Figure: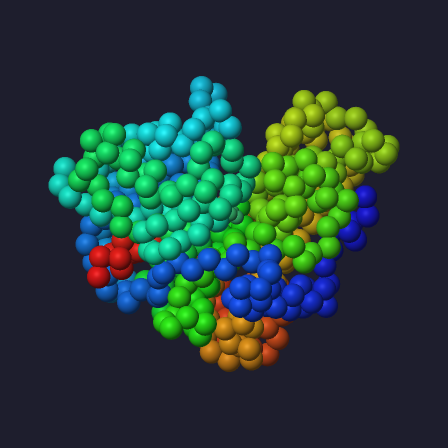
Length: 411
Ligand code: GLC
């Protein structure tokens, strides 16, 4: 493998951002575009939203439920919360042999554990491409991140949730808003910092939302579903991963950027290096199992921590794998940052105003060097306007954002 394969120079990143900006414009105009440009029916919060709300966060790995109190003036508290995995050794609610009813009954069971007795509004973060017709009605376009549960694609997500709440006897819990996690991240950051106009997730999945100032009668937060952007040069490894994935041809940017896929890319690369005699055969069963190497493994490799995978290798072979892991992480951060610059160019062509980009997700939070590469790439792309643009981690955005959305819906 030539390491140049995964390296991007500034000119390539500039071209990539320009193509991204073009896709935003064509997508808004309802011309064919890889960007779905999904309206959220929400604008920026005022920061004075108040009250107690239930938040449900469904992103594909865990179900999280929380009781959240918004105090106004950008302040909030998580009063109670709980989290349950969607997949364990005993069950898998993301599998094709599970249907929507069983999945939503599981979710309603989690809500029952923390719901108060009296009437309460619920905000639902549903982190998949969904076409909304208003703030509380979303239809799943198609699963991403390798989920397969039957009967959810094309369905009305709020109706599935309400039916399950009813079956569970939770008629006091009233769904009021449904949002994407990128929208929740943007809302939570904007609740505190009015300069926030972009929200993004760099985690298991990758996607971005932004506040579109002009196109609609009022400013509107749009979920780009940027993971589906497709104007990027794929390596043979990217192409192979895509061909073997659940939805070939879809979510190409996500397949090069997000945590769901980075470990699998590394697995394909290592197997190829072994096949061509550039590495000795490794004694890890994980190399034969799709998706058995994770983004967490990449982080450990980047930090030069010992891993079962590499323990039989000598120091220079280990350093070689470490370098590939770092290259994959760097490419991911650079591509994400280049899309942010494409959004900035759309909303402020000369990037003259102040902008804050709120980012959540395991890669941004935990992968060594990731946040720094996002920042460095943004600075390089913004050039002389770099000082007006900031980016930073925002935690709890999916939960708190759902509560803020429910408060905004109530108004
Ligand atoms: C996937 C989903 C998108 C979500 C992202 C991060 O890209 O399609 O809706 O925002 O993952 O969770």
